[in-house]
Length: 283
Ligand code: LIP
Image (tube, rainbow, N blue to C red; front, side):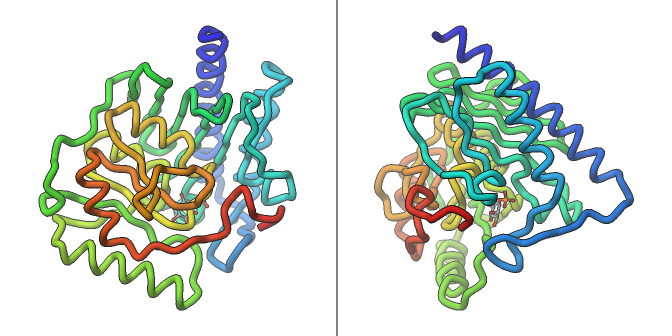
């Protein structure tokens, strides 16, 4: 069976690389992308998101016809968001769609793969950096074939933390986001950064570039692949309430060390978006 998952991972890398070519070509095309919105006026989607997801799923179905899929744009179009024990591809065709629309240069294709609800491999391709991040369960994490190792820093006051503002703009949520940011900044930390894509933020943790990343409001497709890349690079994953990470909870803390993760959790004003496995279709 391990050979089969390796075959599947090799296909995921090839599909992500091809998807990256489609993304770069779309960026070079002067014709204005039609930008649509989903859950809010700032939750963006384009035809390229939809085209890339279709290309990935179609290519996988040809090789692995019995496998299941959870794709951001398929779910948005009404497909059920159901993670079963079946081999399941968890796909964000363009993680950082807002970056894509504004040509802000951090755009990722994220492909996670789970069996029996356990991540078996994760692939994140940072299209404009040409960085292919990969991890297979129990076999380490890599960027363009070079091993990844999280930072050894254990003092949060000597750390950089990645955070995002998300795409929810109601006053209550915005207030909680800023309460967390103010508390973290005032620890103090060396800095707060955000790539604008959960997947690349998690790869930055895995690469040792930042000590931790947290966010509330992400979806399973944003973090599935990155979660394995972080853990295989020696990092830890928690829920923002300090409990065990739950990829369906829409909350994540990814850190280099548990001491950093637990210290960060103390500063986060956590809240509970509707879970991915509880949301009606088209959410
Ligand atoms: C994005 C996430 C990011 C979050 C954005 C958006 P998308 O995913 O990667 O962490 O802050 O609001 O959800 O929508 O670009 O695939």
